[in-house]
Image (cartoon, rainbow, N blue to C red; front, side, top):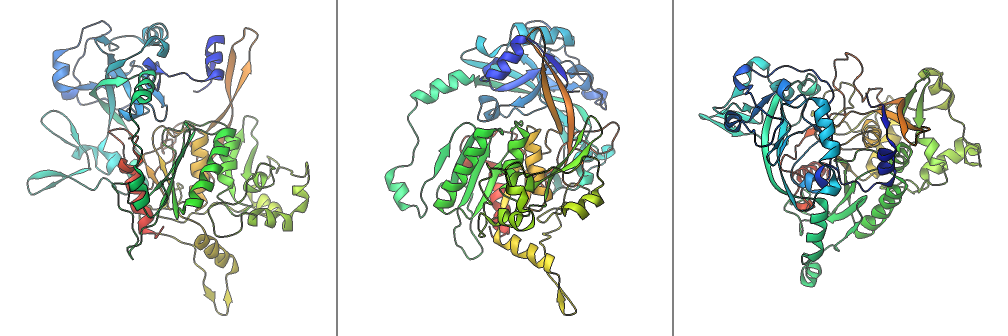
Length: 558
């Protein structure tokens, strides 16, 4: 479904980068593709005229609900550029644009919408502020653990989801940091779309000009001197990092003993050679500043170079035999992508975020396969060997997890930690389990933040760490679900043909992209559910999901 032809102009813009998206807001929007879902109950499927300027229906303004059929042709948000006005305003992947000011998209055909997007709503045509009406998905309550027949509605037709419970005659909000099971997300269906009016969103150009003339909000020297830890903020639009402490965050992160432990926060907006370099630089700066645990933010990271994603993941996995992912190519070949392949690479910076030596992984390769460290010495496993054969001949390990949840292969979530434990069997101790215990205790704890905009290579990175037990938890919402590897072939007319050449599976052998009529939905499911409905704030210390991640790290003594 992601194969497409790119015109010369589209290919040029993609290669050059710098595209600010729909209206210059930082949201990538395209005409929708055909989809099917459960229709919304007729009492809330309010008709809405459209396709013309100023045709907003009064009844729709009152109810604010669209059926699936009414929203089917609306342009859909496919990606959100990190740190953009669209992200700050709370737009997420999957939202649909119902109107821009007085201009309505409702009632248009897909071809009309596509033509309008190309001719009228280019980022370079807009400067200033925009007003949007956004249609956000209303999901079946079974996604939050309720039967469809038991879904509740308020007087305005809004679905009351499980985040509200009925107590003492009132619906009260539950804890937003609910832990979820596979069953709670296994049968998601779209009931309809709720309209939300977003006013006065700055374009990216306007936001840049505003920030250039605004006074800085840097901490005063007195505040910096009073803090126990140095103020560390750095990076660029690809990699941003900060040292989070109780002195500059609304979330108090303390151990049970009352000791304040700083947390390193790293946001990766995409994967590339520059982002890998930036990630290593961020780690070095935060380690020097005394970070004791880490939050890696992949929200709205829509991918990039998959090799760079795996190289970055390899720096956090000790065992050279760990599997980063499996690839299934168009010719039927199937093979694991081993951690060892990146450890022997000349660009490998070493094993990070552990009390062990940074050379410990490469030293293990040197003992077991010294020939792999020679120029051209690495040999990839065959694409047609069985998993059992690969275990016997190459010694690679299947995925295992430790942390708040088991892997995405159907294990039970939210039932406490499953740390690796050594045990005595008569007089013999399981040395392999003892090694796992020592590795776990030497590693600094990591929580990864994900959302609907986490896609492609970012999903590879998240699943590689999660399924190999390197993370304490994934926090956020289900990821985009694009586990495909694509290649753009140049065409004689200057355009390009983008084709899917392979699919990757997670280390726990799960599809990320939904396949055929498979029961499970696409995407990687979080261990702890946390939405960013109001947008992702620029101030990391005021980010709700960052606060959830800090709570998780605190519960683990990180």
